[in-house]
Image 1 (cartoon, helix red, strand yellow):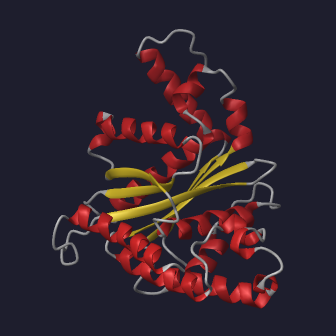
Image 2: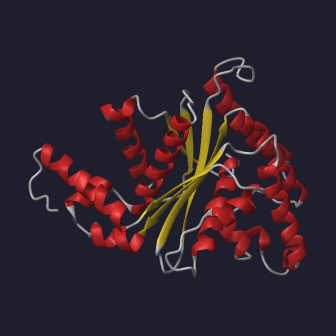
Image 3: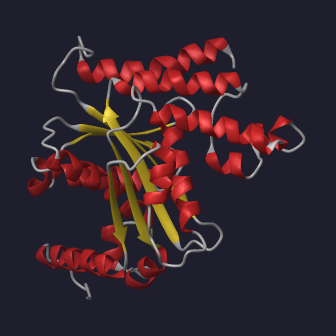
Length: 292
C-alpha cells in the first residue's frame, strides 16, 4: 500500500471526528455517533434492495480504520469491495494468490475480526430492505405519488436513518447520529434531498437524532468498506430463499455473536402504508390528480 495515500486516507475519519467533537473529543461523556451505510441489490433479478450499516461512537471509528487498513496492507491491497472480492475482480482477479480458497478465507476472517474486536465493535447493526417487486407495483412509472416518495434506493436509505434514530431513542442516546453513505449510487442526490426534508419536517426535527449526511468515497472513508461487506453478505443470505428474511445468521457471522441489530422490511403492507401517507400529504397541499 502506498504510504502517502495511507497517511492521507487515515486523516479523513480522524478529521471528521475532530470536526464533530470540536475539541477534546476523546474525553467527552456525551459521545456523538456515526453511522456508515451502503446498499446492495440482487442482480440481475433485482427482487431486493438492501441498505445496511454500522453505528458506533465517532471516536471508535478511528481505531477501526487503523485496524482495518492494517489487514489490507498485510495482503497488499488498498481497499475492500465485496462484489469485486466475491467475483474475482480487481485486486482479487484470477491467476494470483487469490485463487487459493484458504488464502481468501483467512483474509476475510481477518477483516471480520476487526469488526468483532472489543475496541472496534459497532454498537448496532441496521438493515433496511425494500421488496422491489412490491415497490414497482405500488409506485408505477410516472406516478405522482412515486415522485413524492422517491426511488427504492431512497426508501432503503430512509429506513437506515429511521432505524438509527429509533435505536438511539430506545437506548436513551441524546446526541445526534452523523451518517455516511457510499457516493457511487446514481440516486444519492435524491436521498440527500429526502434526508434534508426529513430533518426539516417539524414532527421529526426534534424527535429524530439526525445529524449530518455525507456521501463519500469508500476508499477514503474506510468504515464504508465494512458496511459494503455487511450489505453484500445480507444480500447473499437472501438470494435463493424466496421471501424468508432472517438476517440473524449473517449478523452473527459478521459480529461473532448475537448482536444488537434492527431490521426494517419494507414489504407490500409497509409500502402501501407509505403510499397512503404520501397521498394524504399531497392532498393536504392541494395537489390534484392524486389517486389512491
